[in-house]
Image (tube, rainbow, N blue to C red; front, side, top):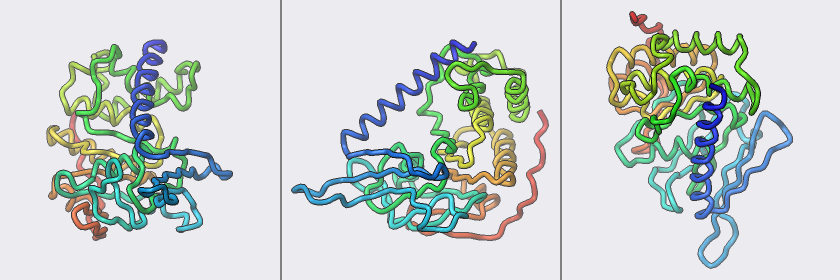
Length: 291
């Protein structure tokens, strides 16, 4: 099992490196570590036509805002190849907040998620991340995921333990218990030996949530996690998001379901006009879902 998980992990890394290579062909993309382990700095520079000085910068300078802010967007625009697809964004996301990212198709929601995750550079402005990038959990749209890999559901979920296992470390009894508990939390224990390609969209999303839970990330970036899945699964996964928020995790979720946004999200960042709205909502836990 460990060898098969390693093969999939290496394949996943190869895909990520390929994406980063495509980005670096467009912009000068340099990553270096700051002296303080609590922050990373990513410099992204784009030269002006004719060879001027760098005009864009995305940094992790925690002196700019208070320690409570996990993400700070300052006059930020995101896009591809220097072309913006978003309005100008200025916003602070404090620790433990749960923010819905809304907007029309093509307004830059997924692009903003990828920019915060470090997969894309900003077109202009600053995107400040006030925690190590290893503590960022990113769940892309299911259409971007490869499900035909030769792993079982249990092995796929176990990849979430990788940061604590290392390259050659095994999965000990404690981690096996955590994997089983994560599968139980998403009601997928009976599918532990199944192949991901045989699962429905809702079942696969439950499995991916279980893997994300095992990563113990302090920031979750979720790109349309409820698109095309059944209402029972949406209720279950929303309860998990609420539990993560109560534990101090910061969440940013791309959503199209307005009633869901209005019911459960006190913070809403609109990619249509760049407005960040806050409101008081009922924070009572969701009703439990029967298996």
